Image (cartoon, rainbow, N blue to C red):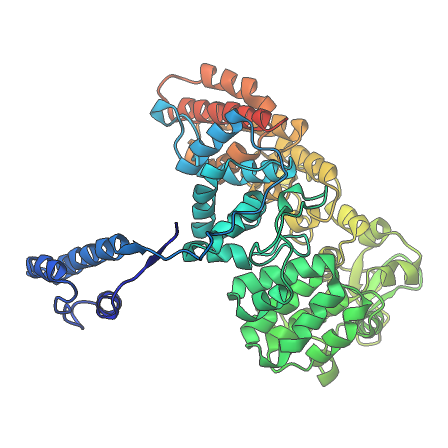
Length: 567
């Protein structure tokens, strides 16, 4: 039997009064007079109002208890409620179900705090269980839905794992209504569970659920919260880019500027020449941020009209010297209306000189093949050429003096990230930087972590491991964040060795708190013995001994957690 809240209108008004007083402050709005049932009025009258702030909290507590206790059984439909659709996926093994209970409760299961915050391990468990095509026991589905209600980043995996039972429950509990508006990567898995079960495809076994009723996808788009609409559009673009574009085009004129910006950004999934007319029109949008995003997306389409225009500007700004041994730069003298329409801001928001800013924007938006096709040189050869100013006559000085070198390489780095060009990213990164004079690392153009993300996962891990071996963990946080998890054995070994060096150098663990937090979630569980050895070697009752013991315990926990899901 289901339950609904039947709170009188007067009590609802009393709750709103309390909330308004809390928002405005008791110094600006007096405490509301007691209202509601006689018992509630008597209890509220007995509250000591000497301290208005304390009294407000006590009145809120009374009203909250009344609201929660005031649920009465609703009259069920004639003939009884329809049962939840069947879920054909195999149920979790008993040990994995017990582990899920521990993770949902957020307790370590061991004394002394020797494990990481287990709520941080829940996303890994959910993703793995979903990939294995398992379903949770029915008794745990409500707790799963509650966890996703407060942590939106869990919703995709939780909704897929909960399957048809989760959607059936969401229809009967307004606290879980987000389930009905959460799109999975599988078309037709939206909306209420009104029919029989339908198993998801092998690529997403967790998407089992009922087929969507006609119009459900449009209901999510038109009635969902903003974040839910962005999620829906993003996932629709991954499966049917044309349908996603049509959906956005239908409401585009009525969307707010800040919403148009994020909706436009979602088009990067499944981006193709078919999107060019819509994006070209967006270059005339009244919002400068929307125009800039449209221009950036168009620049990732090498054959787009914008990319062609930018390539012509780049050819006018950079040329190979007659000897072929240097690049000479003539930055734009002005930012004309055509450049502004193509997303180049007339004033630099970074404090750089305006000509350097315009030049960097043009290079970043130019197809990278322009440089290799026009010169016949590889990315590595181009990066090795000296760069100089072409000068007033366009011929340059007798020898390139390095002017514009940083601007050109920064522009190439941005283009490599934007266009996902692994060859250019690899050339820009080079081998893992080695310490230069004075022990300082040589500088890599662009943001190394962003360039790393363009490379295949094994290559990212290998480059980061080499970097950590040379430089330790001080500048490795963003690089590690770009690596796939769990980290590869070589990368895990490099991280453990760097932690050992840090402990011996006399630094404190909290100097590496960000990396340590990531390590608990991403270090290969097979590294547990090595970490346990570090814990044994550390001086007793020290911060590093505690840190290594906690990390080793967490790795053992993760190893057992993942093994329980291997069925």
